[in-house]
Image 1 (cartoon, rainbow over the protein chains, first blue to last red):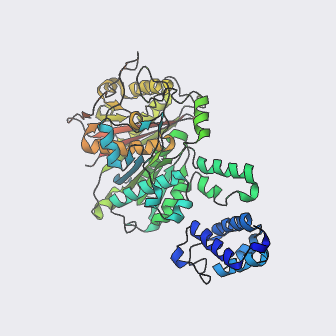
Image 2: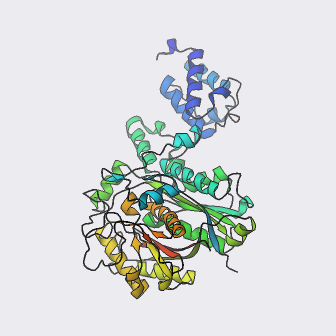
Image 3: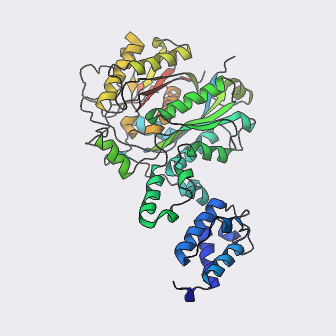
Amino acid sequence: MTPSTITAEAIRSRVFAALEELGADPADLSLDAGFEALDVDSLDLVELGQIVHEEYGVELKGADIANLRTVGDAVALVAERAGA
Amino acid sequence: MRQRVVITGVGAVTPLGDGARTLHDRWCAGETGIAGGAARCDGFAPEQRLSRKLVRRSDRFTQLALVAGDEAIEQAGWADGPPYAPDRVGCIVGTGIGGIGTLLDGYDLLRDAGPQRVPPLSIPLMMANAAPAALAMRHNLRGQVFGTVSACAAGAHAIGAAARAIAHGDCDAVVTGGAEAAHTSLAHAAFASMDALSPTGVSRPFDARRDGFVMGEGAGILVLEAADAAAARGATVLGEVLGYGASSDAHHLTAPAPDGEGAARAIRSALADAGAEPADVAYVNAHGTSTPLNDRAETLALKAALGEHAAAVPVSSTKSAIGHLLGAAGAVEAVATVLALADGVAPPTLGWEEREEGLDLDYVPDSPRPLDPGRPRIALSSSFGFGGHNAVLCLGAAR
């Protein structure tokens, strides 16, 4: 996928799907949902980082991940780095 | 004062299906869990028993332990949590290899996609203590929690250590057992290259035609409690850990001492620990791997440790029905022994037909045999691991 075709909505959708794969309850997923409430921990976020790297070529390093609190934080960061 | 240790819950997932009772009943009915030269838990569906998150966060050996653990915990009446202060409840679970499937998947990703794609869960899933860690988190067990590692004796060592922790007063209860899920191309190739696996794919312990073990997978979990504490809460007692003995051959990396000397010492230690005599033993659940070396050495060990009484005791091998569960074997076989004692029956060594010179014990061919009603219901469950590790449990029926 080239950067020109990446949209914020596509990223939101991919991140939601990834979190569901990681075990989050899809009914609880929203941009406002906090990772702690979703029972998504730092190990899950490393996996999320690997997924978005594979998908969009975006690199999320330790400090980036440590500062993520909500799903919306993650979507926004990926969108920013991917130029969406 | 040394605490008596009772068994209040048992659970198993084996190639004969989910459930301790399933194992006992199907084994006694002469059914086998071996197909195509391997014994797999084909019907095991972790996603139906564990959350999606937990399935992702556990190797198969841990999943097997968790499901067997749920059965044991429920039977013990602990469904709402341990009936003791959580810091007085331990969890000790053995494995031979741990998460070898996770290890190989991680290596494939490393080789094919690079280090950045290696999953962060690789280590916590493959580590040999992953099963007791997961059980402790699932059931809020906050006392001593660790894994035992002694190849095919790991499950028996775990139960022995658990019984000691209770007897010594360190814990009021311990959830214990063993788990293994090593059906990978690497493990099969490696066991085959050392001539340990049966090339014909048949497990027939103690038979003259035996030619190696058949690899199995599964888990056995038991809930052990201090007898006084269990009685105070009105628990139903299924059996008792009367004694435990362990020893080392210090002989060879894989071969047992040919005269069974180390194994015999472990058997004697377990009996002495139980305060029992050879003549008290009503049944032996043997290690009985179906390898030429083990079954001969084990027979010699039983003769050395039990003397004249060895010829009078029914000796059978669970591995004739479900293959060799490696680090889970001792635990699953302890579960099987508890049910054999409870039912007063010695299950058969399936497939035993041809006697080999010197292998002349009563291996319980064909069909289950009622235990001698004139003897106390006391049994031995033996486990021996590569490295020369010997662990023997002396188990009793509920009093």
